[in-house]
Length: 214
Image (cartoon, rainbow, N blue to C red; front, side, top):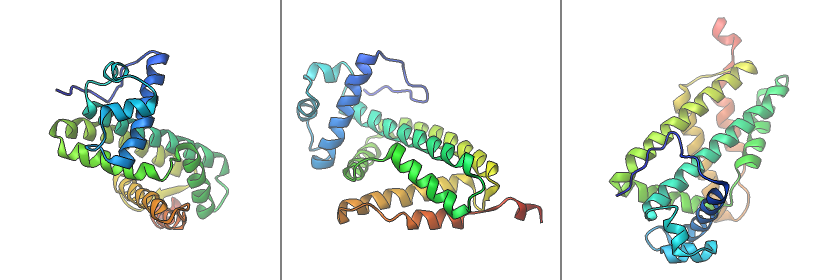
């Protein structure tokens, strides 16, 4: 039975953290190629260069690994958002469109993953949706992360003199959906996604703060 409480991850040793990181990376490749249900623990261990013992000392079962990967990916996106916002703070004198471009570039550099990760992400989310024991911890971690991102976005926009024209939670989900579709198109087209759609969306859902006071 999966037992996970995930707003505050448990601290682990550096060696154990490295092992988990390698298992997660290997599993992402295997899941992208074979799907969650089609991938075996043995295949994941072989891809990571570990034994089954190393796997089970870190994860009680494959569902726990799935949840860990989802949480890892969301946490990576939060860090990428932090770096993107940090990149625009010193550049408040640029135009809104230039600031958006700067933020998108910083985000991709901080959290960029190969296109195949989009396939793995969908496999992971489908598996989590089908497993009742994964739904609650997934939603709890997602909501926790979205609250972090909401604070980052609102503070950054205020710093550069902009505000959202829609609720911040709507903006986060719209931006996430566009980003995920762009990553999936990279798989089909075998070339980097055009950031123009994301730029257009960001520009269209913000406005200068002074408009609120008029």
